[in-house]
Amino acid sequence: MLVTEHGGVPTPAFMPVGTQAAVKGLDAEDLERLGARMAIMNTYHLWLRPGAEVVAAHGGLQGFSRFRGAVFTDSGGFQAFSLAERVVLREEGVEFSSHLDGRRLLLSPEEAMRVQGLLGSDVAMQLDVCPPGGAPRAEVEAAVARTTRWAERCLAAAKPGQAVFGIVQGGVDVELRLAHVEALAKLPFAGLALGGFSVGEPNELMHRTLVEVAPKLDPERPRYLMGVGTPSDLVRGIRAGIDIFDCVIPTRNARNGQAFTRTGRISIRNARYREDSAPLEAECRCPTCAGGYSRAYLRHLQIAHEMTAARLLTLHNVAFYVELVTAARRAIERGAYDEWAKARLSELESRDSDEAFGG
Image (cartoon, rainbow, N blue to C red):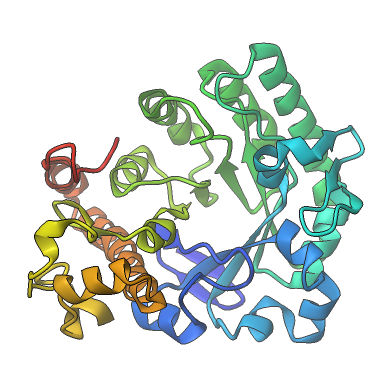
C-alpha cells in the first residue's frame, strides 16, 4: 500500500500518463470511474506551459486537473533523453531549447524540485540522466555517477513534506545497476524507481536485467518501474517485485486504433470487424464494453477519424490495465501469483503475430 496525502493506493498499481495534467481523451471523473487511484504528470511540459506558478495558484495539480487521486510528477530527466537534439547536459543541469518557442532554459536539480513543489505532487522524482539503449559503458557509468550527485542535490532542495523517489540507472548492465541501487539506498528517498528501461534496448535484455535488479531494491520502500510497458511486461515486473508502473501504451495505442484484451491486441481498423456486433471483450465492465459499443461501430469511428474512437478505446485500455494489476494483487493475496502469472502470460502471448503482444 502506497500512502499519500490523497489517499492510499493498493499495490501493485498502474498510473495512467497525464503529461499535460490530463490523460489524453479522459477527464478526472473518467479516471476515478475506471479505478485509477493515481496518475503521473510531467514537470518539463508543465514548467513550460502553463507554468508551475499558474498550477500552484489553482490548488496544485489536483485542484487544477480536478483529479482527486495521488499524483506523481516526472522530473524532466526523460525529456533530456527524448528531446536529445534540443539538450545540452551539464553538471549544473539540463539545458533545453524549448520545443515551444526555442528559449534556452536550464532545468537543474534545484529547479526541478522547485517546480515539482509548486505543482504540489504527492511524489516528486529526482532529476536523473537517462542514457539511450546501447550506449557505451563509459557513457552509462557517467550517467549513473551524475544521477547520484543530482540525487543528493534534489533531496537537499525538496519541498518539506513532499515525498521524493530516487531513480536507479545503469542500462542493461547488471553490475552498474546493482551498484547504483546500493548507492541510492543509502539516501533518504521515500521510494526507488528503475529508470532507463524501454529506451531502445532489446526487450529480452530488459527482462533479464529486471529479474536481477528489482529484487535488490529495498522492500520497505515502494519500487517503481518507469515507462514500462505492455501487459506482459507488467506481469513479469510484478513477479520481480515491482509495485508501481506507468506507461503511455494504453492511451497511445488507443489513439492508433488498438485495444487490449485478455488474449491479445485488437487492431480495430482490420476489415474483419466491419460487421462485428460484439464488444471489444465480452466480460469487460469498462464503459465502452458495458455500454454496448460494438467492434463494428468502433471501427467505423476509427476509419472516419472521429475523436470519439480514441476516447472509447482509451476508456477500455486504461480499464484493462487497472484490472490487470488488480487481478495480480488478488493473486498475490491468495498466494497464487506464479500460477496466475503463467496463465495470464499464456493468454496474452497465445495469438499469432498479427495481433499478439510483444514481449
